[in-house]
Amino acid sequence: MLQVYKHKFKIEQLLNAKIIHSALITEITENTPWLLQEFPVNTYIKLFDASESLHGYRFIPNDAALLCQQIVAKFGRHHLDLYHRLVLVSLICSYENRISQRNIPESIQILMPDEFNRIINGIRKNREGFYFHENDLFAKDFGICRLKLIPCGSELIDLQSGIPRHVLFQGGISQFTNAVHFFITKAKGFKPYYESHWDRRLIKFFSRNEYDACYARIADLLRKNPQVLGMFSSSWWFDPQLETISPELSFLRTVPEENGAKLFLVGSNENAISDAIKFSSERKKLYDSGQYFPHVYMLVWQRNDMLEWSMRLKTGT
Image (cartoon, rainbow, N blue to C red; front, top):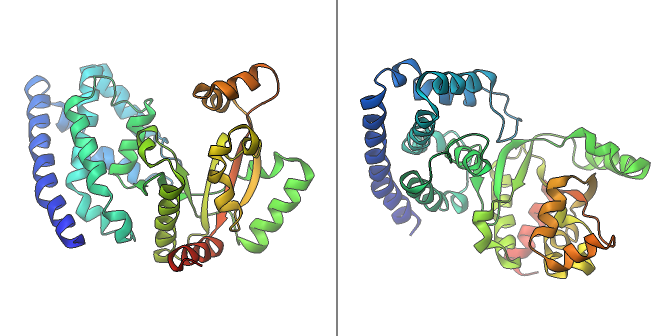
């Protein structure tokens, strides 16, 4: 079944991507015949591939940012939008070569066709202005196409990240002491780690069972990459206050924490507050009355603990 799925991806999606690739080149060159000669797509992609690996998925190398500015100055924002559409399709067309350079398990590779379908359909339909780096949804799609981010179901996983050291100092002396002991003694370092990111387009996978499946895929990824120390994520939904305020969200914290994951206070910010109260009248009411103030926590799941949990999940023990 897996071979059929991969064959279907290769034939149908690759052909579709190449058709769109040709159409975009025609559209760009008809109006601005020198754009792609002056700013080759492969050169642009290489600027990101050569950048420091532990940078986040939204990081833009200086030379790439300058290239974008030059395209806008010479040809206008419309053509930068078209250029980024072409970049995504070019990356999809080179997927087989790029995936061969990564140790990605089949349980994750079979999710790629759906992501590429969505991205290809979006290239046809998305409004002008979507394809700019300041748009987080485009930044995530760009990360997926260049395999900086990979889909694991409920979350996207950054393949190359590390624990930010400033977190050690956010929760007072107790957190500092516990964090230093954990990262030095048990985790054996601060990098490399997988970092998970939620995408609102993955809302259909927002459930306890789907998160279990997501974590199991990350465990598969860890098995194939023994140099990676574990995974981490930072969010307001790991806040222990939600145990009583929004118990329906508590599984996001309790499942990893009950199976060895550690929690560290990061702090708060406007985005966390906005996200925490945006979709819940109860949380907003408590926030407005001063009974709830959202905090971001970082959850760290060390590789051995996560692998042991995944084995218990598979065996039902």
